[in-house]
Amino acid sequence: MRDIVSCFSENAINISHPSCSSYSNNVCISPSLIPSIQNAVTCLYKIILSTQKQLLATVTWCKNNTTQGLNINFGTDPSTSFKLNTSTRLFRKKRGSKVIESDNSKIEVFWDLSSARYDTGPAPVDGFYVLVMVDSEIGLILGDIGDETINKKLKVTTPVAKTSLISRQEHCSGNTLYATKAQFCDKGMQHEILIKCSGENEGLKYPVLSVCIDKKMVIRVKRLQWNFRGNQSIFLDGLLVDLMWDVHDWFYNPASGSAVFMFRTRSGMDSRLWLEEKLLQKDQERVEFSLLIYACKNP
Image 1 (cartoon, rainbow, N blue to C red):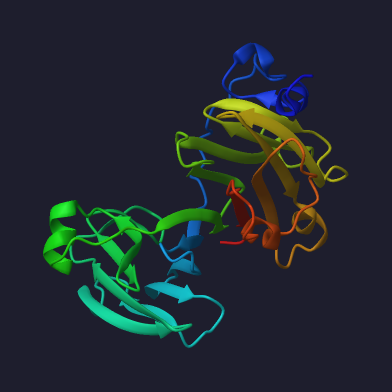
Image 2 (cartoon, rainbow, N blue to C red):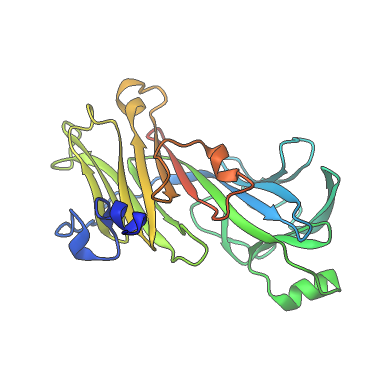
């Protein structure tokens, strides 16, 4: 009997093999437009301690015209949150530590953003670290921090909890060109994702939606006013990935002008119909991942 994933992948666009793509003769070329700017990035992590106790950590980097900041929420209790308020130029507190009590757990947050370097988005790209300890175990490490720095900071050899990235949300604004990167599994590679909405001749009379991964076009949707919602399965890194789009508000609710693009990994046994809560089931051995992009055309 054939493996069910291989059966499903026959009808999915294969990113790693050019001959398997329906758009293999099309090259996704970035236009001269500047990609939209990220206003906020939110990552949801699942932390499993050596005691098998589980904790959810939501990390949000945000930025607007006047402020920039970092929020970390633990569990669902808003009182167990860590916040860094920032100005447009300097963090008010560039380095430090804080102790938080959450669900009978002791959480310690160490951070150093004094040398953080930023691109156009709200999250630093290098020169920083954020370290989260949960009940004397390393629960989460963000940024650049080596073992020597960790040992110096904690002064003892510390066990490391099992941490998985469950989902990533990006909120963007600007034009209808969106560029980002995503890693769909722990051992997978970073993939470049480009989403573009334009007309057949770069006009807006006949809008066309194009989605490219690693410079290969995986979908091209014409008559977008009528095909404003849809989905397509793609196959990469040995995984089935569902790509779903909803650009209804771009055409029929221009006041908000928001669209949603979703990438979600699944096994061949799963349905495309899903809720994010399913990704957090305790008895699920393989952690699935979802990327959601909220795209606003308004500047």
